[in-house]
Amino acid sequence: MIVTKLKSLEEIYDMIKPYSNVLIAGCDGCCQPPRGIHEANNLGKMLKLKKMVDGEKFDYKATTVLRQCDDKIAATALRSLVDDYDAIISMACGIGVQILTKVFPEKLTFPAQNTMFNGAADHEKNSYVEYCNQCGDCLLGITGGICPVAGCAKSLMNGPCGGQIDGKCEVGDYKIDCAWVNIYKRLKKLGRLDLFEKYRPKRDYRLMTSPSFIDFLELDEIEEEINEKEAKA
Amino acid sequence: MSRPAYSNLMKAIKDGKFVFTGELEPVKTVSLDYIIHSAEMMKDYVVAANVTDGPQGFAYINSLVPSMKVQQEVGLETIYQCTVRDRNRIALMADVLAASNVGIKNILTLSGDHAALGDNPGAKPVYDLDCSQFIDLISHMVDKGTDIHGNDIDGKVEINIGSAVNPNNEGEPLEAEIAKLGRKVRVGADFIQTQTVFDIDKTKDFLKEIEKFNCPILVGLFPLKNYGIASYFDKYIPGVNVPKDLMKRLKKTKKKYMPDKKERKKTIADINLDFFRPFMKEIKQNTKAAGIHCMAVHYEKLFPRLFKDL
Image (spheres, rainbow over the protein chains, first blue to last red):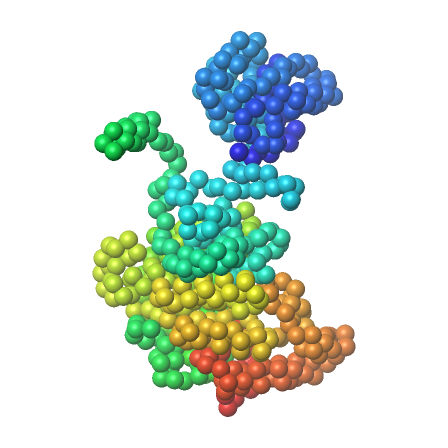
């Protein structure tokens, strides 16, 4: 899931200052913590109260979309509403904001959130934790299933660095686990220290260069290859 | 270790000498007078001196220039510290080529304290390569005459590669650190310098453990110029615990207890000599360490008495 953090009310307020009638679109997709209709309504109320204090008129409609990152779903959900409002506030991740921009180019869509990372909830720690940094060259098969790209502050391929003490990282005041010590512990437990000791050479950062895209045709080709091989077998 | 000894440091180690290295710390300044002065003071007592590269993530003067100037103006060999924190592989190769051009013979490869800990905490850290890959990069340049991508280099790069290790851990975190060190040696490190240590027994155990890598190691020591430095070390340097007795003795030398400057300085020097000379003797006589890396920044005047007859 994509983990997001709500912007400050002041920042959102400043962005929408010229507008008195906005559509606030939540997202019921993977965005975490949840930013659906309830949160869209709350934001609308907060903005309205602030506008009232400033003696300004403000109307809003809160709604939500199954997944803002899907242009067809977003268009279907919001098409009938958009014309009635001066601007849109998206409560989705950065993808959702840009999809609404693409689907409704005649309106400005403003982000209510900062997109933080790809992660999941850790209920023991009562927090969301980053798990994947989209490096384009997944290493989890040689690191015992623990990602050093997302889990190590330096994204080292051959850690740990000298900044770990008792398995805690120098970044974050020694409160966060050193991913490489955890990789070591896990591979030791599973009798696969050979994987730890192996040198991992330089990475190809072209795989992480933006903007990037994957052609639909590439996916079709894989499908065709499987079909051909299955037919032969 | 099959690579030739290009530096005086490596030649001395290969000749079986017990070596001493010092440390110079350029800071946020355009002047290098104090570095030259410190280098002059230590030059007769050490075979080479490390020149630090933005320690603790601070934005200081580039370490290559003082590394060059100390060699040229003082005649003391330097160990150019170079972190992968601030340079991608292109910049690292550029710096290794430049270092070769100006006669640098030792590079200490470091990942570098994270930028978030420094005086520009919002800076984007690089880490295109990690430390092991940086060793691989220099190995390519020295041993194969190519850059890390395989492109030919004009001329020869003759550099010995240093690597750092932090023995200040226990249990599995230390095992992981040791396994990483083995990886670095296999990739091409010529020598190792340790983080500051104060515990002789732990240090000896650590040295015994890494004998299997058959790579010369210099034990890192940090003479304490005053109580303030000692307590800073104790509090803020990862994993470093200054022994309680040493802290107690140094505390008694604080200005308020010992107002006479001369007496204070003499007492502090004696405390350091009492602690570090037996420590170094033990390392020299009863371990296979190749030498001592003495990080006595701004305390070089202790060197003549510290290293006497060792």
